[in-house]
Length: 336
Image (cartoon, rainbow, N blue to C red; front, side):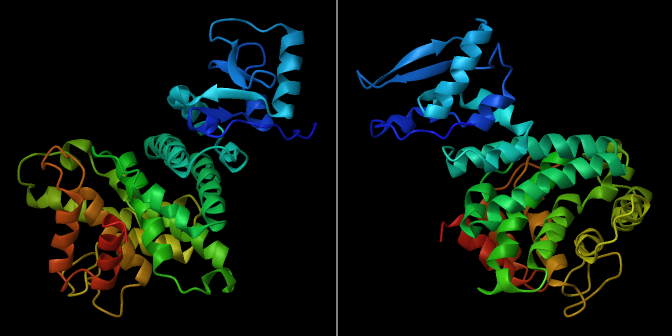
């Protein structure tokens, strides 16, 4: 593939347009790209239409387009952001190749892609589908490993309506930020740090796996749960733990997220009624994001709370929730 030549691109152009990466172009249909394409005309220093959706490129035009992309003069409009985002979300590793997307735009892509993956997994929680979830989550950890500050934009991409998949993604993206915010400056240099991050994030995404074994009519019930219904809800942590074993996932980090996210510092949680010192830091983090993300999303049985109000409620309940983790959450919401 030819290297891009350096072009005098007008300042501010990329506020309105993306410059297409050659790898992104290769992912398009060669003769019918999914969105409008523009060419930068050097002599007059302006953008002109090159291809319109609905048209068809000839083989010669397709080859010319590849050459122009390699030269760095082909763009797509940011007005087509939703189309571009959806396209890349189906091949998530392309995020790592495109240097022209903003962090907010990349956060949109991760949210869309991972929500789709989690919907598929909760619909069919088997090893084959889990492997696809893992593949996309590892793209996410690769992305943030290069710069931990990238988690701030991701943590702001939270769904406002509850579903199992939406909740999983909310907890994964927010939990990733809180997890890394709680690490020491030397975390990157720690033994197996990257593996720990990968497994912890997978645990955050899959922590409510056992809820797939609870009938939807119970999960979404608007009236007070009956004792046997509450028992089914409380059984989801151990059900999830057993499901991990059945699909041959045996990482301690993931097991802690699944089995400990309803344990509380004062022993009032479940399933084991663990207390301070017995609950892992990762289990505590998962418990905070699980509760917070449930409160800020619209559910059949409760309206959504304002994020700061929800965080303050957790902070005020310091007997049950760890104040240091909740403080990180409040700092994130305050933009600190």
